[in-house]
Amino acid sequence: MKRILVLLVGILTIFLVACGGGGGEEPDAATQPPPTVVEEGGGEEPEPAAGGYQGGTVSDGGTISGKITYSGPAVEPETVETDKDQEVCGDSIEITRVKTDASGGLANAIVRITDISSGKPLDTLGSDFVLDQNGCEYVPAALVVPVGSAITILNSDGILHNIHTTPFDNPPLNIAQPATEPEVSSDPFTIPEIIPVSCDVHSWMEATLIVVDNPYAVTTGEDGSFTLDDVPAGTYTIEVWHAELGTQTMTVTVEAGGTATADVEFE
Ligand SMILES: [Cu+2]
Image (cartoon, rainbow, N blue to C red; front, side):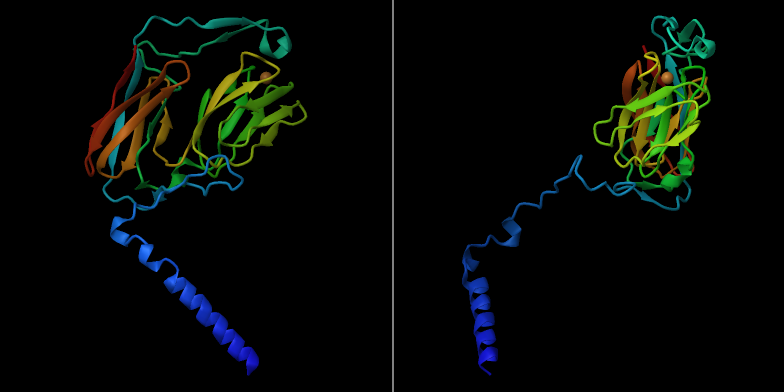
């Protein structure tokens, strides 16, 4: 009985403190500032895959297509004298950082929607994301990777390469890949960002991973063309990124079942 009484007194004390302790000084809900959302960057906990993007069924989606072109001064291929692995790399290697076709169509640009919160599922980007080391170059030069996915790194050359990423937010990757390891995997990428890739053995080797949290991202073809399909009707920001030429953005409105054009020219 005594224990119950002590317990009751304790509960009553807590109740009185909770109700009386400055209760009148609490600002009422109407005057409180909105809650602040603090985003943690680079913390211990990985971000959930796909961030805030909601994938689902898109009914009567539209299409955004266009052509990315380069009309500035001709960018000549850079000839690099190789100093090792010449049996595979050759005595010199031609690096084409700005690759265009006869009409100025720009290859290896990434076109993506940066402000879309829902649409088709992220896994429509596919499930295999492969970066090859072939002819002492990375193929492709730019690779879109959805958050939550890893990449497979192939060594088609059969010589020692060392894949080295320099991300801001994702864990860095620094893997020596000798001929005996024709295939290695990265950890999954968890945070959207643009990640440079280089090789510590061959200084001219460069590539870029574009980690995205929505599936509306695509690499331009050899002629600079691109298509983003199943886009819910709406107005979006399209970002065009190229490793050498930088970034451009434009606003595009796509109607249900319609096709919008987004042509972008780098000068
Ligand atoms: Cu290499």
